[in-house]
Length: 114
Image (cartoon, rainbow, N blue to C red; front, side):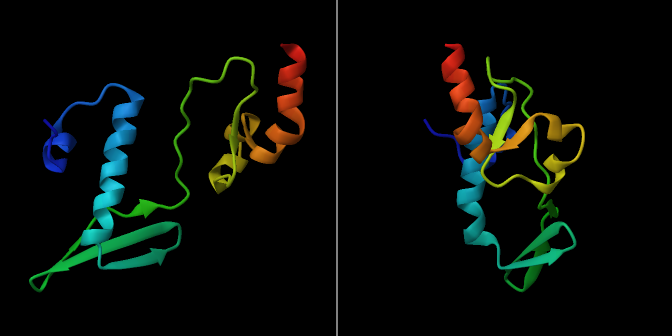
């Protein structure tokens, strides 16, 4: 039996996959209820108007990203196609690299070490 989105939001999450699944469900639901999006500095402010009543949701920081601390076995860090601005400053910039570096350099080092 599948939980409703409301029930799923209220249930406990332990594994990273559970957080990913609920985030995916929220992202699928949002376009149906969000009427307006406004960018203010680094934040995205969204609102919904229903029956003449406007409700705003908590602003999103567009450049916020979360670092999952389990690194891959023999790789030096994480590779991003579109690196968040915050990842370019210390201490994150020591472990976050452009995906092109993985393709052009690090994958060959990994294969040579195997």
